[in-house]
Image (cartoon, rainbow, N blue to C red; front, side, top):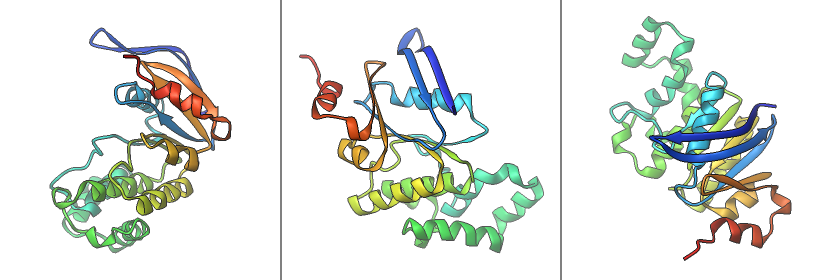
Length: 219
């Protein structure tokens, strides 16, 4: 078991965000987190990251890119700990061919290799998301925790990006809003509503009523 939460409650500034969460994630699972904004998806991902920070690539909703760094250097930062300070400083001034080729290969798969040396502040929202996905892949970790990583992408590149993530990570837990895409691309869905897990099923077992209960708002 990679993650196991038992009766976990998380509060911020005396506000309860997640209440009595019981959750287990096995190696190899591809899980979509569904729920309305503010339901607790991001909080759950952060908690999971805290538990296994050394083993996980975490892609936050704000993407975690440095505006004044190029796509290449933003991606390279995911492996800073693998090299010496001197090596990293030299690479900052003049990128090494080996690393440059590795990063370019990932960006090419995501169809954004033309932005290799473009600084983050000059990228569109969708381009930044693809750079962040590339950064997660380049890290070499086996587990991906991603918070809305594809929300700004068009349908074609969105599906392609999901396929690339699936091929790059053994285990994925991905928060998203697109229900149809979640059902199409992930094997398990966990639905959160008002800080509680309302739905936890294999994708093939989910009904329209399940989705309706998850997003229904009482007026």
